[in-house]
Image 1 (cartoon, rainbow, N blue to C red):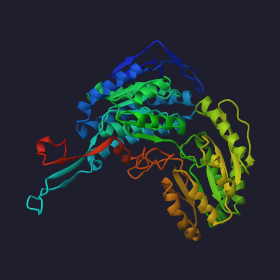
Image 2: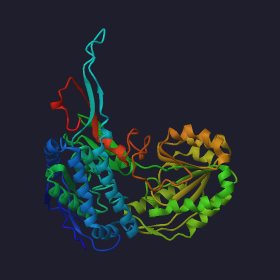
Image 3: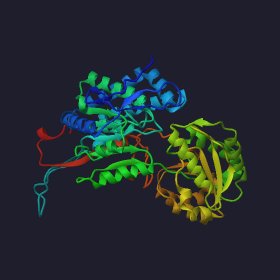
Image 4: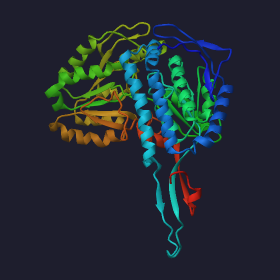
Length: 501
């Protein structure tokens, strides 16, 4: 099955073209023309989403679950074509796209099953106490209700799992919120074919056509129009700190501010305990190199910093050797590749930084970099904490446990923090736990953070700048709660209560 994009937007069930177009920039294969989004199209999509909310927001959980399953079915039916155009546009390998497609359909089905159970509704009932003194208590019921239309921005690094039908879209639809997606220009064809799958599911299940729209391309005016449209009630975003912060500020500056759920990345530091290093330092270094370079390092959970104590030469040498043997990889876009090289140069110019592995990368290709710096110099140079999106690692050498703790205290908010330890490292690790627990949404022991499980217990978020809302996650069933709000019903007859209460 092959797929040739038609280059149109999907607005409330209609494929819409306009005169202005842009050309895709695939890593390989043919380029295609796509219509450029406009604020006017944004307005149409938002109006349609609001119209859809009056039925979709009050639909049964069973009907929404059937819709989510139908989307997964339609994506799977287009599996080969999605993989073909996805690999062309992004340069990601076939196995990666296949795995990501499975993750995408898997989370759609997980959310479907989750909402049928109803646990996310937090239903509670305080019965009336008419005889309570000095004042009676009314009958009180609590339930979570959908908030309305949601805007979602597709991510560059995950063309499926964090884009058109990715986690933000799936969570919003599960909650009962129509979605308007701003497609990412790095993979517009992939976005279009996934939108076709959602469109087919809408028709199959009889949902209101305004429940989903996709707008491709466009400059800042399109993104601005979307987050500031008065009918949009929340925004989901995965991307850069600069872009996310700009959208966050726009959401906050609205006459009626709305929540912006931005996942903005992090450096995901690892704390390497000394006894673990002694026992298996070389293995840990080689494994770090593998995690650091997977997908050309284009993961928001990429473990970019390893904090060690003196005596970690085996770890550092193994990482250096493993990275030196790795071939260049194609990055998602020319812009990301340029930013990667700029970031590497910034790290190399940092005070006290020594280069352990320097490479030459050209065009869209990325090769690994490895640097080393003392804890003292790292603490003095805030720029060394800033994310470099790509296969770049920094070994930070702390002289003692106090310096290691100082690094943990100085960290900005992170998606993940990791401790590598043996039993003999327990006391040192215990001292770090309160520090890193304040910094990260997910804490690992003896593992690597690349690869985020989609599950009830997953937290993919953290204190700013990892995300703009430390109480939320963009992965796992808890993510649905971003798009609902609690409502209390006082002395409410059952006939007026929401479905399923």
